[in-house]
Image (cartoon, rainbow, N blue to C red; front, side, top):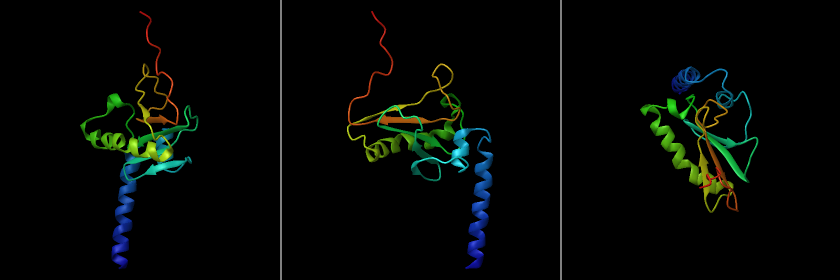
Length: 141
């Protein structure tokens, strides 16, 4: 029994070392993943963390992030497809659980032009009881 606990502890320590290498020490979202900065968690598993936005712009507004540090969606590779797909798959369920029963908006800002503020891939999930406003003004024709 003690040997199993030691093996489990050794595996956990190795996993923690691996995770630390896959994160950016200065990234605020990586610091949240490591527990250095508190958040209001909506969901967490081995690959993904979802937490409430600290400056919500809708009644339902939370972020979904991969625990592995990937700066932008443009830098994601084939190896990231599974976790990004998982995030897309979790969004509807978590949105409903947070009160967005009749739809939601999923936003992934990417890079400077996309106005990405935190260089760690993240999805904003927004919703509520009433329809959201327009995302971008339509050009006048």
